[in-house]
Length: 128
Image (cartoon, rainbow, N blue to C red; front, side, top):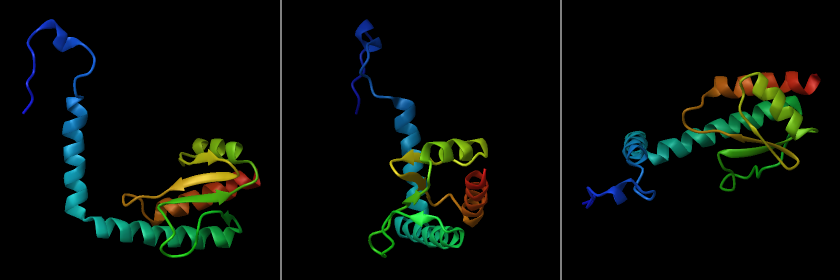
């Protein structure tokens, strides 16, 4: 129960962001509908596929490979992380430059084609 005021102080900063709260409720319903175990399995499957594609390209994987230590976030070793991230952005592939590599964050809404697009774009950027 929220006790909202009708006075002018009701316009001050500090009130809950209702649109965000309502959107979050919907997002949680989506996650519950899919199921956390299924989401975890999907991310793990895509991570294995990402590792396979990067191995073929000879791109170093800086993140743990061991099952149980992996995450949906994978660090890839590239010579120029900032330049590589910029080049990928021009190809509509979103990654972040972090330290000695780029960060690739897979989630349940990604698919193998997304990983293929990343691999193809990354190969092109690294050749340029």
